[in-house]
Length: 122
Image (cartoon, rainbow, N blue to C red; front, side, top):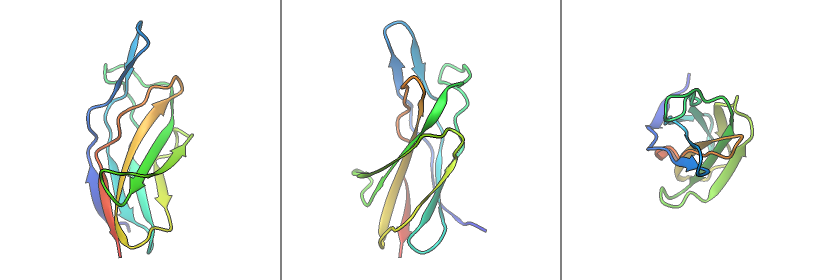
């Protein structure tokens, strides 16, 4: 059994345009849960629509950023697999850690980062 220790709803998502067409990804949330000492599991539900309501058919992966300051997420993990919806971050030292995730598509469209979620490692 995992205890949910943090959840953050996503902010508005970035609109990308090439001057002819526009594309943007819909919001999603990130959850942070305990796994083991020094580790957390991040989980999210993959976005399925763009902000205009059209189907999201080319989701390519996610970028996770994390760090010990909500304003300076200095560590980055890129997941090049749209089928992944959880990720374990290991080897975290004792501190409060902050996490955010964004999605990206095969054509380069990226969402903004989700709202920041946190977990204290003791």
